[in-house]
Image (tube, rainbow, N blue to C red):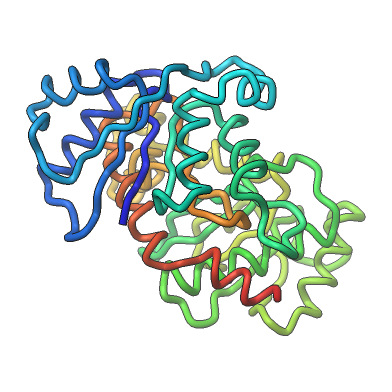
Amino acid sequence: MKIAIDAMGGDFAPEAIVEGVARTIKAGLPQGVTLVLIGQELVIRGCLTKFDVADASGIEVVHADDIIEMAEHPTKALSQKPNSSIGVGFTHLKAGLVDAFCSAGNTGAMHVGALFSVKAIPGVLRPGIAGFVPQLDGGTAIMLDIGANADCKPDMLAQFGELGSIYARHTFGIESPRVALLNIGEEEQKGSVAVQAAHQLLKENKRINFVGNIEGKDLFMDRAEVIVADGFTGNALFKLGESFYEVNKLLGLHHPFIDRTNYESIGGSPIIGVNGNVIIAHGISSPAAIQNMISLAIRQVNANVPTHIEQALA
């Protein structure tokens, strides 16, 4: 298994990225896993030396001249910088040279790159970005979408329920994950026209375990393993949840559950519905976040989610 990592992407790249890789190496890579760092080779090798893993096994470096900056227009940057770390990463993923590609760089470029390189799985209306929501019982729910699709039609929302269900089944090992639709009330007639229509489509889908609507107050309450939302609503609520950790820290409070709302605890968000394993990390990612992102990538490759989605939609 080869996990490619954009060494140049992120607010604190390349140091934070390479340090996260170094921590992963020192903690012990699973047998057969190689981490492929993509970016400016001399810079990367200097960082590997700094973090004392220059001669460690399990690391490869692939040179890429350019960097797509955070503020650049995604489509324009990808077309003008094919030799960027993101561009080269997707070239390797499409060619099957790596099994996953992860980056804390330009989110738009990662999303566009996934759609134009490995492409959407046939039958997927719109791939979505998934977020992981801790539950009070110790479990984790997947929220889809958290930012890729701000405006969603009913059939898109309904499909997020199925995509999330497949992901939860094969990544979390939940046989019949509960699917809930995020709404402003539990009643079927609540919400926008699109959300009301999506409710009916989800209710009629016999391939999923739809349990109805949930509200924002239910986010952490173990009401579902899959939470369906449009990208605008999902992103706003997900970022609110992530803020709990920082608020508690500022107040001098601590609780193990709140620790799980820290963005570092998972390290990244997968794009669900494309023909490959693509994981987007926070731009502010720390070494700890990168280490957890790598663990997520390994787990996702083992779960083989894209193949399961393709089979389900065939």
